[in-house]
Length: 192
Image 1 (cartoon, one colour):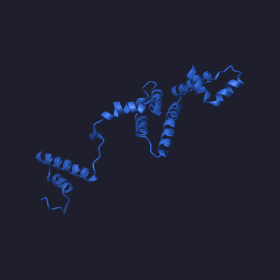
Image 2 (cartoon, helix red, strand yellow):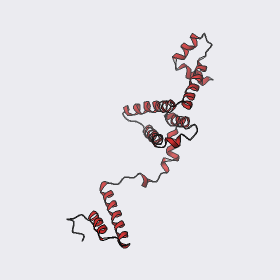
Image 3 (cartoon, helix red, strand yellow):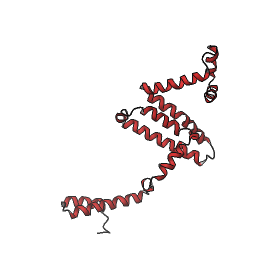
Image 4 (spheres, one colour):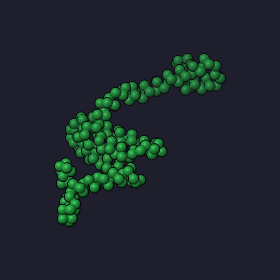
C-alpha cells in the first residue's frame, strides 16, 4: 500500500479527486481503479492494442531522446535503447504480418504490453537479460557483413557452382551459354 501512496503522490489530479470527495476516494484506490481500467480497456476493446503500444513506447522513447542528447552516453544505456527498439520492431512485424495467428493467442495484447513495459525502462534490466540469454548466443555468421566486393565474389561462386552442377546433369546449350554470360560477361576473355 505504501508503494501505491508514493505513486499516487506523483499525480496531483488524484489529490484533487480525494479533496472533492471529502476523503471518500483515497488516492491509492484511485491508482488501483486507473490501472484496472487500463487493463480492462487493453483486454476488451480493439483500441487496446494501440493503447498498449502507446503506453509501452512512451517511457523508452523518453529515455532514448534523453540518451541522444547526452554528450557521452554510457555503453549500457545505448545497448538498452538498441535492444528495446530491436524487440519492439520485431513485435510490430509480428503484429502486422501474423495478426491472424496472434488473435488466437489468449491475452496476447496484455502479454505484449507487460513485456514491453519490462524491457522499456532501463531500471528493470529486461534488455540486459535478453542480451545475455538470447542475443549474445546468436552466431556471428548470421549478422556479419561482407563488403560489396566480397558479396559479388560469393554470388559469382554460387552461380558458377550451380552452372557446374547443372552442366554435369546435361542441360541444354542455351542454358549453359546464359550462365556463362552471367559468370563471365562478354569482353572478359582473360579466363577462357
